[in-house]
Amino acid sequence: MKIGIMTGGGDCPGLNAVIRAVAKSLMLQCDAEVIGFERGFLGMIEKKYRRLEYKDVSGILTAGGTILGTHNKANPFEYFGANGADVSEQVLANYEELDLDGVVAIGGDGTMTIAHRLEQQGIRFVGVPKTIDNDLMHTDRTFGFDTAVSIATDAVDRLQTTGQSHERVMILETMGRYAGWIALHAGMAGAADIILIPEIPFEIDEVARVCRERDQRQRFTIIVVGEGAKPRGGEQVVRETIADSPDPIRLGGIGNFLREGLKDRVDSEVRTTVLGHVQRGGTPTAFDRILSTNFGIYAASLVARGTFGEMVALKDGKLTSIALEKVANQTRYVPVNSLMVRAASAVGTSFGRSDLEIDLAQPGDELSI
Ligand code: F6P
Image (cartoon, rainbow, N blue to C red; front, side):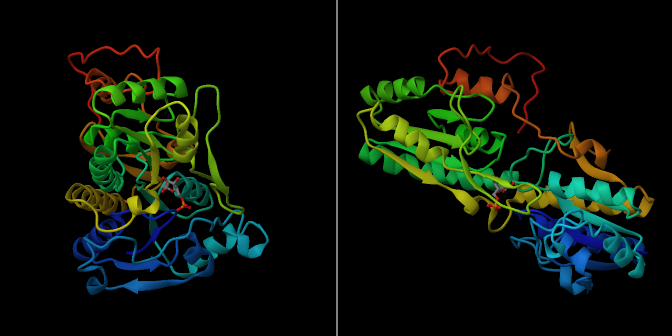
C-alpha cells in the first residue's frame, strides 16, 4: 500500500500529531509506504513530495505547525501558477504516476471541498478535520480549537489584571471567522463580562450600558469579541481580501471598531488587543494531542479498510466518518440557544443585547465543550 499525506489551508496546532498518527499506524499496522506532499495542494500540483520514514514522524507529536508545510491559495481548479487555469488533470496524472492508493488530506472546509472535487476525478481521499475555528459541519470537534481557546483564555486572564489595575475597558479580539466558538469558550473560561459573537449581533448602546454599570461597581470590564461579530443591522469588519485564495475574505478589526464606538459612550479608557495568529502557533494542548492522535488512527483505519471519500468526525463521543460532499462549503455556527450561551448568561455575562431571553439549563441539555 502506498499513501500520500498533505496538510492544506491555514495551519493549526495538532497537524503534526495527525501526520505522526496516520504515518506510524499505516507503517506499523499495514506495512505501508507513506509519502508527504509539501505545501498542501501545491505539492500535489507540482509533484513536490518526500518519502516519510518512521524516524521522520517520530518526536513530532508536540511540535506546532506542520512538517509538510501548507498553502492557503493552492487550488488545482483555479491554479494561481497557471493564470487561474484548472490543473486537476495534472494532479491526477501525478497521483497515478506515484502509484498511490489514496491520500489523507488534513484540512478545513476549503481542503475538504477541493478533495471532494478531486475524488470525482479519481483520486481517493480520506479527510481529517482541522481548524482552530471549530466551525466544520458534521463533527462536534476539530483539533486545534482547544489549543486556541487555551491561548485566548490566558490572554483574557492577563488582560483582567492590567484592566483592573487601570480601571479600563479591555477588549480582546479573537479569531474564529464566521463562528463564535473561540470567543464564547475563551470568554466563559476567562469570566469575560461581555462576549460578542457573530451569531448574536450586538447593540453598541447595550455594550456601553454594561460597561458603565460595571464602572460603578467593579471599575473594569473585559470584552471578548470574535472577529466575525457585527453590530445589529451592521456588517462584519473585513481586514483584507486575498486574491486567488479559495477563501478570499479575511475578517479582523472589530476590536478597534468597538473601541471607537465605546470611547464616547463610557467614562473609562478603552483598549483593544488583537490576538491574531498567536492562537494558531505553538504546541498543542494535551486534549488536542489526544484528539489528533485518535483522528489520525481512525483515518488510517479508513484507509486500511479501503473506505475513501469520507472525513473523520467526532459525533456524540464516538469516532465516525462523513461523506466529503456533505462537509464541503458549510459552516457550523454556535446555536444561539445552546447551553454555553445560556450558562454564560445565567452567571451574568452580557452578549451585548438588551432583548436576549435565555432559559436556565434543562435536563438532557447538550454541553458542547
Ligand atoms: O481558519 C483559521 C483562521 O485562523 C481564522 O480564524 C482566521 O480568520 C484566518 O484563519 C486567518 O487567515 P490567515 O492566516 O490567512 O490570515
